[in-house]
Image 1 (cartoon, rainbow, N blue to C red):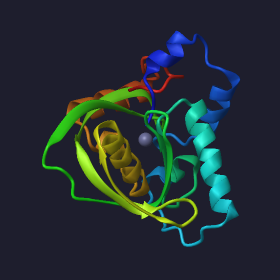
Image 2: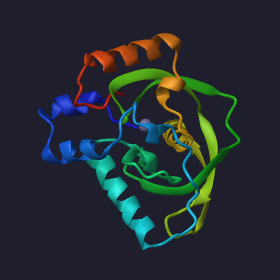
Image 3: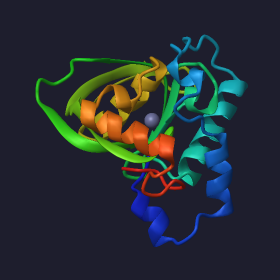
Image 4: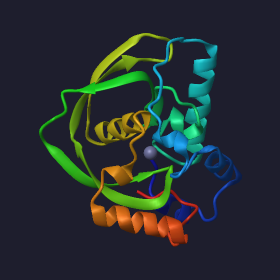
Length: 189
Ligand SMILES: [Zn+2]
């Protein structure tokens, strides 16, 4: 998921690190974003290295969540950072979605510069593994719940344009096609 476009405007022009990060991120239209990612089977150095690289790209972008397919790796690995608490999830599985749901504008680093309303459960149980292969099992709420649902969608080839209203989807695709997104360099939400 992406941070608000305001961050870029506040800081003026984008930094070199930000541009480098953006170049690493696949954008809508790239078929890799539509694949179902494979389970991770080996918790090795390569996995830790990939997670570390993704965390760096996410922070530089700047974003608050990133899934491996967004950097062209079709494996079930996500990183996110809500409230300065960086987390890595391997093979995450979501269950016990709350009946209570909330609609909020959501952005995506792979759908640059456009935010759109997406309805999500406000609470969800997350099970999976950390990068060292230790099991994790917790309940995510609020923004963390939203980010986790967004990132797990990426692992299943689902994007926010699939989850929003028909009107918002059409407007977003039009803006992307015509290059009229509010700030093509920034992140949306
Ligand atoms: Zn995304």
